[in-house]
Length: 409
Image 1: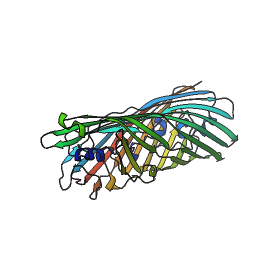
Image 2: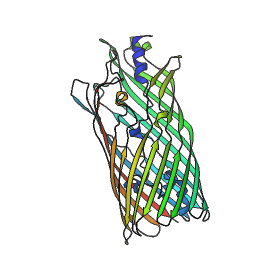
Image 3: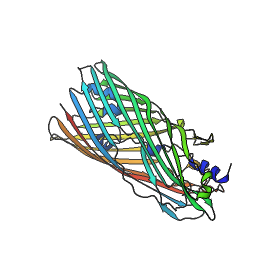
């Protein structure tokens, strides 16, 4: 196989990556303000995502909608022994959330939710040192989730739901064509319009002041189909990838277990453990229409998030909320890739809520994601046709703000 085409194949193998750092857990301003500790609370319509068993706490018809503004930041210093710093370009993302629920009676409730559980992207200067690995990546994943919740006992509720998902991926990078030809641009676009999963939830209240909750989101397997487009020297066009491509990727399952303690009529404290099965992202194979196939190990490992949050409600309808969590990196440093950089993260959040009247409530929150720099000195990722390792220092973080409006009839 031509050396240019082989180089391209090696570079393309991460075009549908979903690193842990780009799993979006912020699907409600109120829950985000509490550090995401909502599985054992779930007492508004966003329960459809966090723990649908909580819908049995609601009466009548409830709507909740809003958006989250995510502003990720990322940089790379290297390639070692060089210490030049490259900053990713600032981008703004606005995933939306929408929920509607209806209580048929005291025991049975239904709901429908729309969220973006995975997404975001990165954009680097087209001439940066890692241009042959990544220039721009955009991942958009959407889900529609109908759920049903049933109160088995006065203090025990369960739920189940179907998840319908569709996703789009776009990625560009450069490929070296030779000393005189310069670089070629490679653009990959793919989508899957019909992927499916499921979700379950349970909520148990053993004591008046203590609630326990658990929720499960299944893996979802996407079969991406799309095209590869190349722009470069005409005399070398046959050596560059083009035409139809196909790749499978499985997003991880997620299990959340939480507890909420009602200290008094005003204060609630909650804690939560989230297990994320990132080991489903083990190897990625890309298939070209000419029969060329190639696979690359990603070797992600199962990970977890630990959360703590609280809410204090004043008599005038104003509430203050705060939270903190630790999100463990799911991949070894030697597999770090600038397509979607990540790190161990600490998230700290706060927010305000205001119940305007018996029907209408507004919540706003802010979350700062902090991460330590990660030094890579044994990289198995390469950034040149000569397979030079991409050693250096990665740094990633984010500023996140959210606004949600809820109304009940």
